[in-house]
Length: 127
Image (cartoon, rainbow, N blue to C red; front, side, top):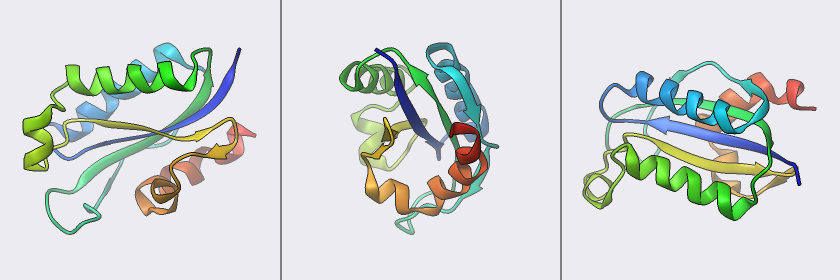
């Protein structure tokens, strides 16, 4: 079964832009009919830590919500987002499912500029 999905990608550690671009390539390999926003810098929303590079990508996925969530978390872990990085506020890569089949599943992320900016670039193409 196919599902429409919109992902938010972000990085505040290491080569932030390269981290996001690598995650975009990973996502493009599992999504069909992708729309990808530009990669852009945003401030860290809690006022501590480094600025982020962000991107929003939307498309169609054949996996279930649970399987896609597992895949995103495995990708994060494989790319350095472990418990030590989390406790230090270092985010080599963060991938979140924000919209699933037209429903906002992460309303807080949906409301933040780090998502809105990229989503505004691709929203029309996803309709």
